[in-house]
Length: 331
Image (cartoon, rainbow, N blue to C red; front, side, top):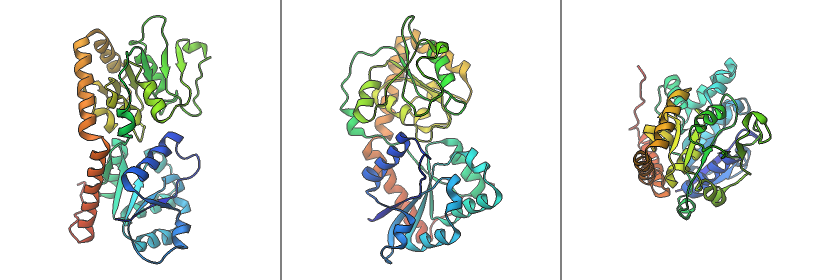
């Protein structure tokens, strides 16, 4: 099996963590050869089995219709990896939106990451059922973390309207003990810093990756991540992989599939506060939720499970090439 990852991701489009997530998918799940469109044009004329194009809606104007047709002719099956937020698509001008829609309708298969809202939007505008890519983290690293005594609370998400750091902070305030800090995962270009007097008990962590990040996360008893636009959902999934109960939004697959009883609707701060109070006051509930979250992670999100799911996608795509694919109507 030969897969080419067609990198058309612009600088600064994704955070470092998000870009690393795609890179891990490429290396550990797809075993893909990464190339740009120009490198493919200047390379061999032979067809390749699978091509996966990654390009956000904001860069759609940099891909011509002829580029799309070239890629379509180059690969036996062409996938489009969609990680664009709905807001980006809806803000496109008419010409770029038409090109974006043409791309979605031209490729053999659309891969949609984690976010339930974006997945549903693609289904509505194209009538095509995207294949949802599950969030991926490196199982081997996560399982090498040793269990330690846990205390305190950590939140994910920047302090802005998209990543809902304020909402996470409010809910986490119900979980933190008097005199202790609410810890926050490092995020690039956040609006809040640890010296802000409004958040005197907020302590931001340094930038951590890989095993260092998992070891740090492992120290906390509770987690809150209220972002409705985390396209990869790695924070929520890492919590589940360690058995740390996480309160979050029900639009994120890795949240609702691992901690359904701790998942609330968008802007559901009041519900989140109630769940935090119950989690803190009931040790039996805490243990049950923790066990369920870890079990769901093991059943859905290990490296082996993700590889099996990806092979299923390839089998579906092969069926499509052989004329067995049926478009899904939204009517």
